[in-house]
Image (cartoon, rainbow over all chains, first blue to last red; front, side, top):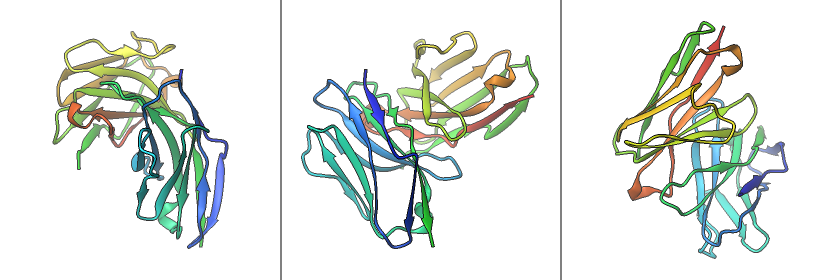
Length: 115
Length: 116
């Protein structure tokens, strides 16, 4: 069975600084998707970034980028130029490539942004 | 982008009664919908997967008779919590997928259920 592990329950970063959130996963599949979701206090789940396992290039979305290490099964999220609005719970998630792709979530990292 | 609407956003019910939560895809046909439960400060736990027109597939440990899921159309799935008890109080979230974009899940706003 696939598992997703986030070892940092809480993180803090100064506004305008950079922070990296860690995620490791375990799977026997060779092709899959990895995601980072943001859950602000409203609790609406927001997709931050997606990585396809067969792509070697790390995904980027504006201030958000990932470091995808397939052999190490590591998928970290880097947030550059942190903003107050980035404060939220961040979940790492895994999905297979089947017709029905259920998401398997990590335990989450609560990110605080200090002004 | 694709929009999923979940209703109600909050509900309080008495112990022993049933509560229905709706999840609608507003601008796309959702071939698959997922129901999650989230306890305070915890992660999302998948409860069940439902495909339009067929029975839901429940995750291990989830009571099928307690949490009834119906996916009668391509735009609507419902979760009914039957004979609710205080321990059923939680935050419930649905997400929807379409075959055309099955790499991405679109989430509803969630429902906070409180059983008193």
